[in-house]
Image (cartoon, rainbow, N blue to C red; front, side, top):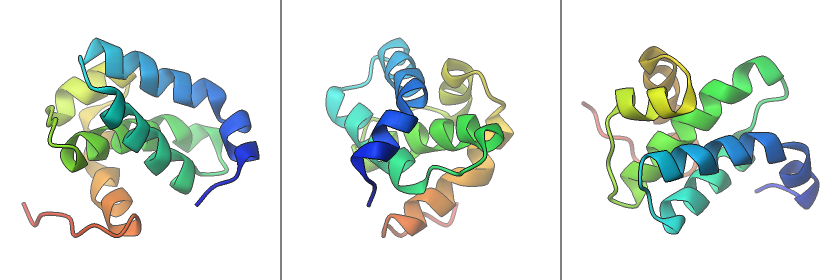
Length: 102
């Protein structure tokens, strides 16, 4: 869970998620799920936030059935595919989902 303050403090990262969601032609549901995932797990360090935002968007696509490739999400979020790959399973797991084993 997250507070309204978290939303305000991370507004620029939420805007990055929204912009990438539009670029990837994702639904508002996927965008909302990605934002919720990011806010519930946003790191304190600004250095890590971009990677977590990208991985949250990728995880959101999996949850809502709007799958996009890790590379496409990484490109839209201006991170490396490896950044997405390293974090998305942990984000799903922390959110209470069972990540696939592949």
